[in-house]
Amino acid sequence: MDTKSKDEGAQPGSKALPRPSLLKVMQSISAGALGVQSSKRHQEDFANPSPWAYIVGGILFTILLIGGLILLVNVVLATA
Image (tube, rainbow, N blue to C red; front, side, top):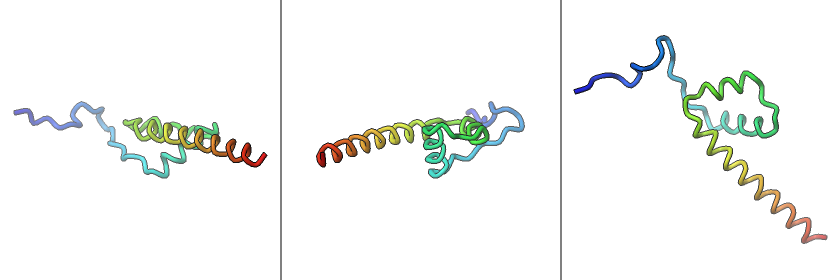
């Protein structure tokens, strides 16, 4: 039976990073979309071992942005 721990392959002295909060993910996505993200926040984002929160958040942000633009155009055209 193999009794090795999951962290045995990790680098010595490295700490497991906690998952980013929903607020941090939303801030990073919106700052990245606007192009105003600080280098400190950029490094924190890339230190996270799993990119899935940012990928899913980015896809949702894009869908909401496109949907909002379509809605805005339809409202403007309906009132014109």
